[in-house]
Amino acid sequence: MGKNTNRRRTTMLSWSVMKESRALWTINAVPRTAVYGESLRNFSGTEFRRWDPSRSKLGAAIMRTKDDPALLLPEAGSTVLYLGAGHGTSISHLHDHLCGIDNQQRGRLVAVDLAPRCLRELTHLAKNRPGLVPVLGDARKHAAWGVLLPRKINWLFQDVAQAGQVDIFIAACRRFLNKGGVGLLSLKAASERWTGEGESALFDKVESTLESSGFVVDERIELTGYEDNHVLFAVRMME
Image (cartoon, rainbow, N blue to C red; front, side, top):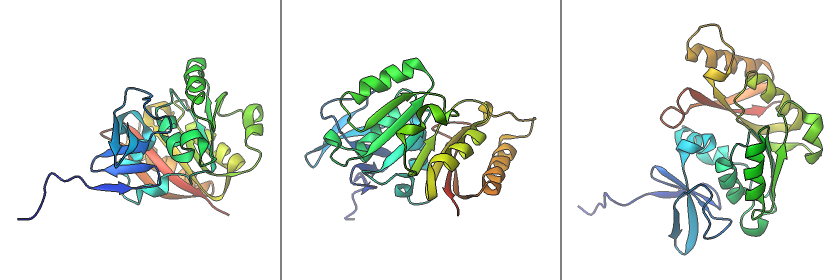
């Protein structure tokens, strides 16, 4: 008696990101506009966009983490680097949090991708999202675009579906991430070279490589159910 079993529990993970039971939402930085067909809804007079974790490795990790999901988000108003930006699903929600309407938070999101088609979509997205900086480039070739990050940063995300993901991630963190900064590596087993061991053994080997390369692995997040055969490693750069 007295219990409302239909009542949904909501938690604000940041000023812009809300977790509602099994759903994620971000305050829309471009009101009345959807990016990939996602739902728009008003909560207490503020328009939010539904963040689909089945289309976003970052969203999936926020739903799957056993730690405080807010720890996976960068500080609003900071500068961040996203390697493997894709078509902009995760990028758009990250921009909502990092920058807000007309970049009221004064954030900067440098989004690198190797595919011209993805860059066209990111460039279109950036027209109405100041603070988003699309870059056509290879995640391995820092010299070509590293000038856009003259100072080290506190948050870096990588989702590149190519062999050598771990080496690319380690090199990028060493080049761009502050000591104590958070690095998030989305890893697909099938994109790594391996010699027949099971996926668990492969991910164990990756974790060991990260630790021996000077990182603390805060969490290894299984994305099963949203992104099968994927793990997201949340690490920090050590002194």
